[in-house]
Length: 240
Image 1 (cartoon, helix red, strand yellow):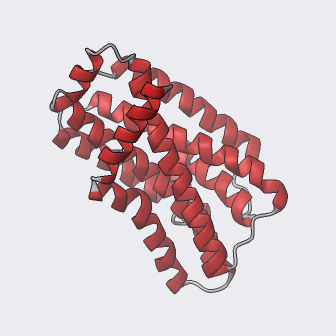
Image 2 (tube, helix red, strand yellow):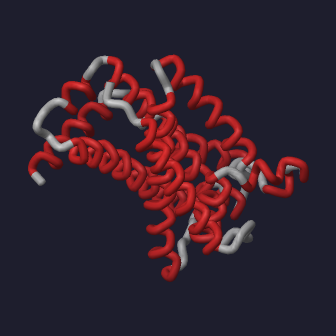
Image 3 (spheres, one colour):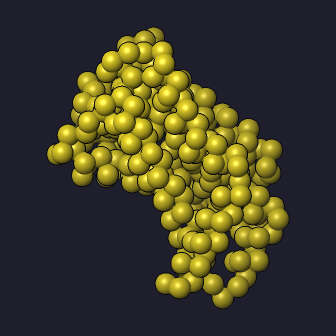
């Protein structure tokens, strides 16, 4: 437990030195929520807060997990840590644990912003499933980041892979635009993206948005994505 706590603290310190990761995972979702609040009025402003939280989780995986892992691999940090008596599961647990903490912090910041700036009120009965959606959705995107890091061979390639994943999810997951705005021929793509189900679940639980899917379907698909991403991340993860 002491080793895990020490690695957790070291991971947190390393993360906090990366200004780009902080920008994309903590500040940018908040700034975008504020931006949409300037464009829309009334309840529409709060309706964008769940989408910004979904994007924050996506950016956490794409920018807050994948590039730092590749950098640690290229600088031989992972190899040296893997060669120590420290169990590898402890290292991975610390890496995942800090990123999940970051995801919970994202959720707290955006929920507080939505409540204070837009009067967003989450029904008392929704807090427990919302906590589940936050933890599950954050873990899915963190696992996706591990997968991208395993597939990438260099810092340059992980950035390219991240962009390939990020842009379709941003614009084709009904996160920034209502699903009715998208042409029907794109529906199979929309339904194939985990961010679609995360955004739908958060929107239902945080602002009572009209469901695209039943809530249990959102959770089931996210659970399936976690299993698939996790298996692939383990398959392709490299220490050096």
